[in-house]
Image (cartoon, rainbow, N blue to C red):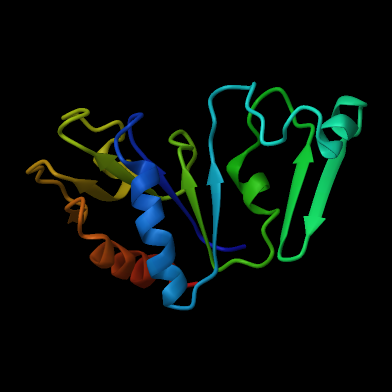
Amino acid sequence: MAPIVSIVGKSNSGKTTLLEKLIPLLSQRGYRVGTIKHHAHADFEIDYPGKDTWRHYQAGAEAVLISAPGKLALIERGPSDVSPLKELAGRFTNVDLILTEGFMRDSAPKIEVVRAARSKELLCTQDELSAIVTDLPLKLSVPRFDLDEVEALADFIEAKFLRQS
């Protein structure tokens, strides 16, 4: 299985923005990156009412897959709680790295994003972290990257998680 690295932090701390910058850098280096997003609410929809796949699902299909040239999506009925991260990650067969957004309680290595405008406190303990991305002058025993040091963060991820696997 591909290595998993979880990007964690408080809501609106910049996790998605960081991933939007990190994914293309790693892709340009030749890595295939998959992502898994933890969503706290059970009522999210990625399909639209009235569309064929939505209608199939509403009719009771356990799984609906839509396929088009160059893209496919699978919608499945899932358990009432979130599946373990390794189980979710096991669905990826064609990636070199899995980056998650969230999954703070999982044991996967974590990189926490802490932005002064949002909070000055960490969610994780230093022992739980592989690195931190922040605009605060925090002195920790893990590597620290400024919010705009995405290239350096990509170097760190490549060295620590990709070259070892």
